[in-house]
Image (cartoon, one colour):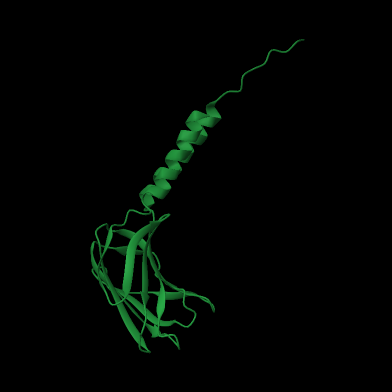
Length: 176
């Protein structure tokens, strides 16, 4: 039983270990920002701004020092804000974020899984604020485990399964 628990803990560590490994620092922003903070397996940068003109253009420049596969999400929690475009520029080329979810309470734009090289990136956000003239929300950067990580995790699960299958059940003496 102990080997099984250790195997499962190891597999979980492999699956989760690389998720929050991005090293991001904020270089500049036209909005008020805080973070990045680690929330589970996500790096989160909170943003807010007020007294904005309509339409608006805001930028966030950050440096990523850990190249890898990532998904970037832009979320606003202000119902009056409507993004019209969001573009990430940097060493990996321009990457357009696409609307993923939009309802009366919030809006989310994301990238597909993209390979980000180490370097400086600028996220340019354009949209309208409606009557409020303010916006807020967060930007999430989530690392996607690489194929080698998945292979090691599957190998670990296979080894645990093999070890469990090899165990023999104790034979009980039977009276004839």
